[in-house]
Image 1 (cartoon, rainbow, N blue to C red):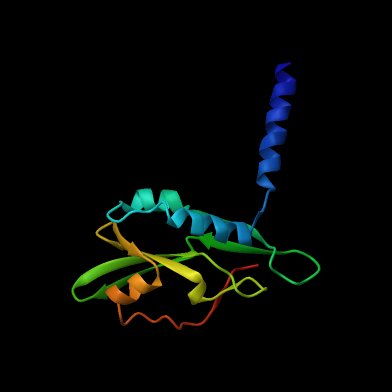
Image 2: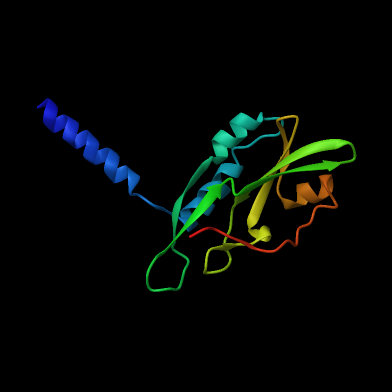
Length: 145
């Protein structure tokens, strides 16, 4: 009986390792999690809500016949910006993919803006208010394959 239970447990663990999330479910989850954020939330809690994982994702948006698997970071990227004597950390999450080849463009990311490890706001409009000199038109980035 113990042996059967052990084998069942191992099979369950192994099946979980092969599960690949789709890119569209990642973006949907990230958008849904944004509504759970609140200003002045500490960074640890905000990242726990939004998620912090790196993994293979199936590009279900691709028009190719065989599924494309990409590795994406969630959050997608982070940067430090100094403006007006303030040091801000900006954490970007993928919240939309407009193209069908899983290439992530900056306008498909939603920034979370932290100051002193506290969430002070999120979204591109907020970011442009706080850091007007931020470059919004950087080149698209692509997940590694």
